[in-house]
Amino acid sequence: MKTHCSFTHLFCVLVMALCTSPVSHAQTLKKLQKKAEQTVERKLEQKTGTETGQVLDSLLDRSQKSPTDMASNELNKLPKEQPINTATTSNENKDTRAKNSNVSDELQTYSKFDFVPGEKVLFFDDFSQDFIGDFPSKWDTNASGEVVKINNVEGHWFEMKAGYGIFYIPELKNLPEDYTIEFDVRTQGISKKTSSVARLAFFITDDNAFQPGSHHFVEMSLPLGQYGVFDIKVRNHFNRKSGGINSNITADIRNAVLNQPHIAISVTKNRFRLWVNEVKYVDIPKLVQELNVLNYIKFHIDGLKDQEERVLIRNLKVAEGGLDLRRTLMSEGRVSTNGILFDSGSSTIQPPSLGIIYQIAQVLNEDGSIKLNIVGHTDADGSDEANMQLSKERAEAVKNALVNIYNVPSERLQTDGKGESAPVGDNATTEGKSQNRRVEFIKI
Image (cartoon, rainbow, N blue to C red):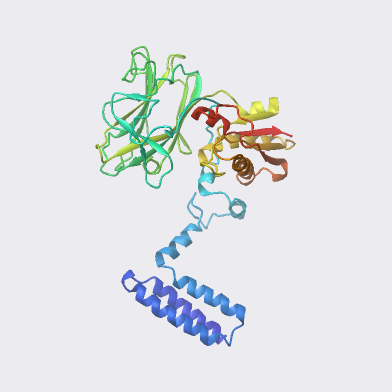
């Protein structure tokens, strides 16, 4: 009992010391660590080898950590998706968190994300085929921009300079009635000093001129300013008439703007929807008032300080929509999708891909008799062996998401990988590669 008390007292002294000011922290640690080691040595004869090892590990491990590290470690143990409320935390919630402990917070956040990308890729550009410092070869502008590489950030990015210019893709035209548009945004230098009029504007328009549109266009713009909550603006303009729909949607996306948001847009005939990360902010049933007249997409940056505040995009994907994965799986017994995206060379699922996995989970949870084989495919970059292994790991990752996020019994799912052996697109092109990186779901 005496030994236990002395060790408890020493531990308390250590904890109190670790919470003192940084000025005296280093000297105090050295003294306490030396005292801890001496105390442990004196107790070696009184404690068993196991007990001594536990005490030594505990004391010396804590003595090597700063108060900030200790606080950070404790915070990292807490669920990040919602505040803790001990008065209302039920056993059911505890069981759910325990079951999903191997699911990242970001994936868990996207668990109800209902955006489903189109299946037929019409255009894809990650700027990997462009030289750093050049304007991207597939784009056109009356302003200025360049492809850049950001330190410690994956891939090439397209920086569009602010001003009065328009950026668009000449080869992307004649858009169908149903399609989706996705891209990642990165900002630099955005702060509370950024102007309230700073915006990233996006147009779907009837012409390829350096203007919003001749007779018809739809505009959506995202606020970039940080010192206040500014609206997402959405408006339409048809037959040279404005004033139809002009909506200001209250949305605090300031934190998202600073942390590389994923933007997803769905156009289904007249309906226009917009997601920023996992949250749907815009859903207007009749924004597109005339079909088959909006044929081009354009970007515009406004209100930024030149050289100080920057907006960049990456992974722009436009795909024809209209495929309901659930109906296809039920009617045909199999469905293939290239909308489930992974980190490059990895089996880590990108959270915005969960809309598709969510649809598959709905089918499985509605009919308990269905069993699926999940098959992964890759493009031809890398060796055959590496791609085969990667495709199997990606299929397994999708299975884990179905099991751990959507509670599908694991015994109803099998996995396999085909690597690069069954391409559906040309591996010599960026678009073809994106089609080959896909996942199949096959009823067993």
